[in-house]
Image (cartoon, rainbow, N blue to C red; front, top):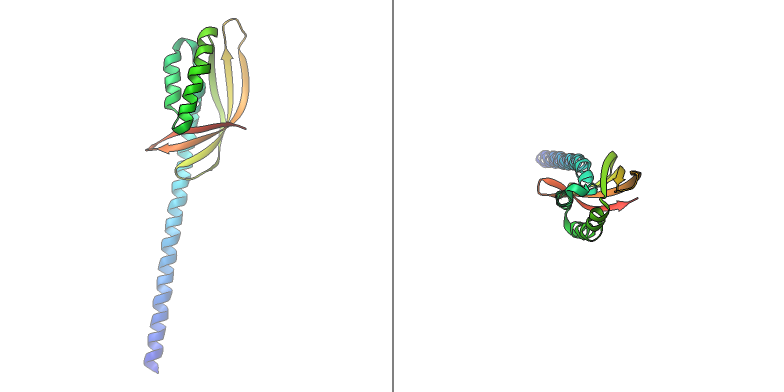
Length: 161
């Protein structure tokens, strides 16, 4: 009887020890994933602060370089759609009216996201100048979807809110 009880106690201790080890492993993995997501959110927000002004600003005198930089800040289907808008709407109007626009990010906040895709709320101020017109300043809010592409973050969507 004594041998069976000792073996039972030893088996229970082994099960308990395995449970503690498994719990520690799960906790460590979740902690690492949380850190990974927090790092991704911070990196995406930092890149949004840099890329949104590039995406939304252009000077009539440097239009080709500015529009190329805007397209290079984007990715995926959004990049293709944005390129079409730049070529069919922005380029002709900027050239004919000597239109220039400067966008400034006033504030940013993460709305949601994971390690590969983060949505950032951006508060923007845009100033537009055109030949023969007074400068026009407006403010807006947009949700910018930032997508991890390799080690970088590019704009994969832009939605007004």
